[in-house]
Amino acid sequence: MGTFRAVVIDKTEAGQQVAIRDFDDADLMDGNVTVRVTHSTVNYKDGLAITGKAPVVRRFPMIPGVDFAGIVERSSHAEFKAGDAVVLNGWGVGETHLGAYAERARVKGDWLIPLPTGIDAAQAMAIGTAGYTAMLCLMALQRHGLTPDRGPAIVTGAAGGVGSVAVALLSGAGWHVIASTGRPQEADYLKSLGAAEILARDQLEGAARPLGKERWAAGIDTVGSTTLANVLSMTRYGGAVAACGLAGGMDLPSSVAPFILRGVALLGVDSVMAPKALRVEAWARLARELDFGKLAAMTTTIPLDQVLDAARDIVAGKVRGRLVVQVA
Ligand code: NDP
Image 1 (cartoon, helix red, strand yellow):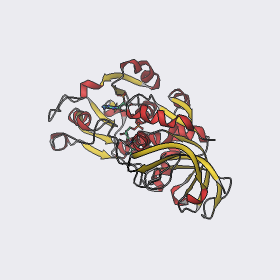
Image 2 (cartoon, rainbow, N blue to C red):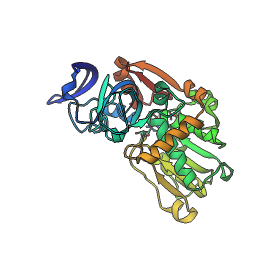
Image 3 (cartoon, rainbow, N blue to C red):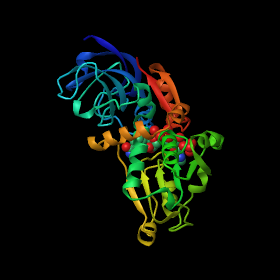
Image 4 (tube, rainbow, N blue to C red):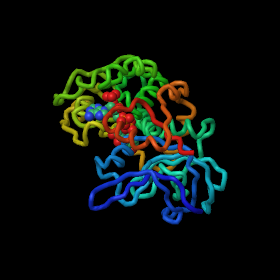
């Protein structure tokens, strides 16, 4: 099968090196489906992997990239055949299994889902892991029984990838959305996605009081740390916050007060190992419910050779919305 172009992270005694180079098909890892990758994306985790800022990569050499859309080239998996359009998110791809920033990937067929009806590969990756995670958060809030009549919903890290899709989804589902951002210059952007109010990031950054003024019934938090602690302390009686991110830190300096005095629930959301049925439901809902005009407005497309710069930018909090990587 020869070689193909890939972003490759190597580790030597001098540390981690990242380059775009030819990669030999024979060095791909085991898997029963080989995919011609057409599109990938840049997620925060990809930024951490490429910059080495956190130990995301646990095997070297590694091709980073946690999500892709593409066309099956070869398959011995019962569900997929050559020519099928597929999507992959997570499962350790780009962390422990060679990943998406490459013209070819070989993975377990069980990790793939068919490209959802009604969207193309570029749109699927404009959604990407960030958008699919935003939908998992909305589904978690809804499973908890929350509806827009219970009060506003807050989104933290709102101008980022998960945040932008979360704002669009919540607003599309009828919520009054409060978008928290550290980038006041993105207020008009966030309003165009459906935010009703903008809350400055620093309003949620100090040490959290056990209980604050009750301001929202629901939340999607991509930031963690003191931000999540403050969001919890200001969540209305019986409300819930879906926590999926750590852009502000992995700690959670909170108290039990919101949980035991207001019955607030903290709903953990993981996209990486989420079971297939949940993925299929999330993707089907995204294809039906997301406003694709808003999705286009939040998306920038870059070629594979700009991934390294984009990785540095996303870790620095400089990326707005979603970055699609056009691989082929
Ligand atoms: P982005 O970088 O696109 O978005 C993160 C946003 O958080 C930034 O745009 C910024 O928003 C805000 N932010 C960044 N740094 C800080 C900081 N130091 N303090 C406070 N806010 C900050 O990343 P993604 O949308 O791809 O991912 C968001 C988070 O969700 C990440 O932590 C990621 O690891 C996590 N994630 C988790 C998943 C899971 O399965 N649980 C899946 C996907 C993502 P603004 O400028 O508006 O303030």
